[in-house]
Image 1 (cartoon, helix red, strand yellow):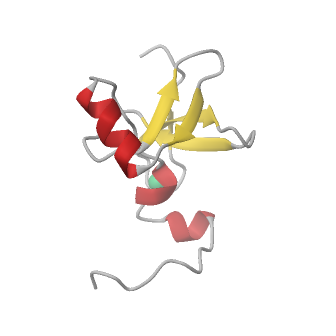
Image 2 (cartoon, rainbow, N blue to C red; image 1 turned 180 degrees about the vertical axis):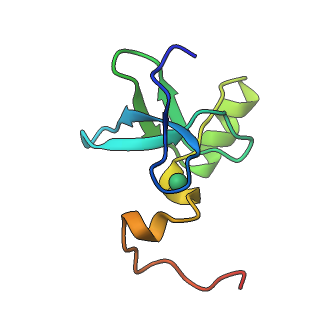
Length: 91
Ligand SMILES: [Zn+2]
């Protein structure tokens, strides 16, 4: 782990921040995920780019590890960001 790990201030999950193409800071989970859709380049600072499903599958097939935005999975994300697209799916 060469990037500076931090911890989510809400749920204390280990994350790091990467810069998106839109020059925003995205909290990314430190462990690569089999269902991840964020491609991280570990430069200084690290950069993150969300990829489409087909592209993600191609990258995984090529052995490229993908990560997941912590925005998508933080159990307390609604305290960070009010997202009107959050539905009751699965409840
Ligand atoms: Zn969190």
